[in-house]
Image (cartoon, rainbow, N blue to C red; front, side, top):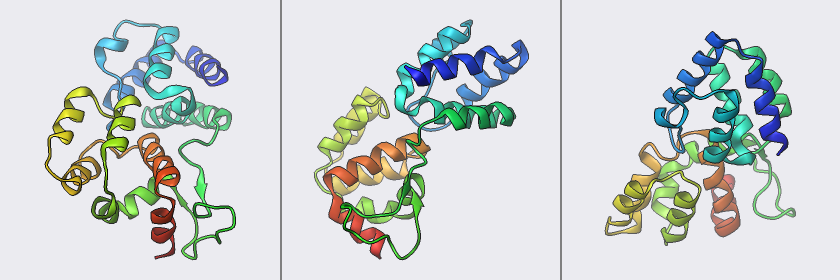
Length: 196
């Protein structure tokens, strides 16, 4: 609830022109999950706040809002909101899957940097894609059509390639979802990649 309140307070501070720039940037934002015009057209800051929390989750909404504010050239508010944000998508990865693991020798990577760096290896090495696809659909990273399209591919390798090299897992929040899934379900793969 604190994230929703912080976002509402931030959007209240925007002038009409700045609010329009914010909503335009929100609509232009690439990657999934995303907000569509029919969800926010003609809505006030309270309604836009509710839509954003529903789409991005309480956990990720502040980091997404800060990203959108920066895209709308509202850096001051983005910094202010970023300070209120918990670190969901920007958490630094400094250890492998267990607390006993040493920090990777290559330095720390954000979750997005990890996914971007190891995208090809993940596409090759991840098997049994069904739980991941189900998670991404439940988190609204994939809509029903995208989910069905990817599920219809004949092999796990093809499904992972479509997922990782398409437009689905590009933003920091979606990379965070993928990374946390990997950390929980494939900890040895994460450790292997970090040590390579």
